Length: 630
Image (cartoon, rainbow, N blue to C red):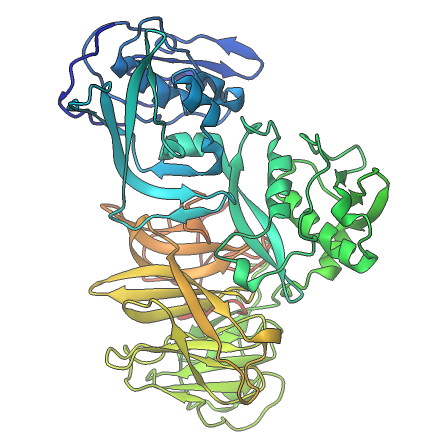
């Protein structure tokens, strides 16, 4: 069979038209096609199984609007298919649900099919793949095709999602040769290469949990929504396997796992599910056979919180089994909650009223009484009417507050349980409002974080709990001016809003503390913030943020060409939910680490507003700078 012409014009991968009923795909079917199955029945859909055997190079498009419940199976190469058809068919088959990607391997040479291990990583492109036919070489090898596209992210061997820099490009070359008189790919890509829409159809985000001190930290990863083609494990088993393998590389330096090194699921375990008593039994290998009960309880706690978000039914107990399937230990939902130190659910919401006073209120989503009664916070702030507040933060136990003066220059630490005069400021900014101190933030350890926004002296500061000494904190890789700081409830992540030019971008940094978490001891290494990573790469400009339940972020910002909106993000930078209803004109937003507490915001037009579940925004009062403890 003769090779097809080389040196053709590049083919641009454009989004396919939206899926029709049942997730059926319309649009191109180049050199190969896919069979799509929905539920138990297999439906060969119009346009989903056609197999052209001749013709010009056609578009290689990304899936768009495909329901995650649609199962996609590759179609093997036709006899005597040309190089273009082989390449296009292979790119289609990479997105399939075939076990071990068997159909995709049929487009490869025998050696390449045997050695190809795409399951170790995924490359996510913002759209489809640009596929170019390259000019031939003098050495007589077969045709070559270059794959390229805008890289959105990668998913590494530990299932962690890593956003790519804004200008990142993906490029790889496929070399074709003839084997048994059939064109086949000799050099497949080093990872799965998927468009964003295909990635969202195939994968789903889950949290696995590790300890930082006594606090559980959410480590977001992506697993397949159905059985993994390589391991044949269901999503729950994939997630547990990822938990046992250890934390993501980025989070690894600041968290620990209770599982002994080398712990794995008992050989042959492909499916894990709760029984009729809402109990999950997890068989493990010999590495755990002699683990002491306290350690086993912590292991079971990690597992319970990890699986809890995945199961449709209520999970009430996790049992860990030794390699001989005897019971090693168990933990209940209540017992796991006692082992994992979680920040308390807040009693109050706080904001600065129209008179510059720091006040608190209780918004009850279950109450029919919508008379929002705010009261000044107790302590020195209420006893000093002349002191006006620009912004403030409250500790998680709601016993202390950090308040920034109205001019933005001074930050004061006050006790909310006892009255008394206003203390001296613990930190004074170089500049004044609007370039003074940012809104402060408490972390789970009781430390206070704040940024000096002065363009000539921008810096991050931390006031350790129990002291009044502000320490300057090194932020590795910082490129710009910090304008907002928000410490995560887990105590190991810090969200920073960084301004460069006229745009503000959101980054997450890892808080690295000295051994034992203490830093106020003389001679101890300083606390640092390292490995900044983009937390909202889809946003062209970010204006406000808050941490939300399960290690997520609530981000107010604007996508390219879009309007300002509030969206839910994972801490790894992937967007996971639609925007909040009618969330335009928001200047600040506050969420608690508790799903039962409503979102509170500062609206440009309406002042302090809140969002009851399933309702629209409601006005509370004139005011600004709303916060929950933290």
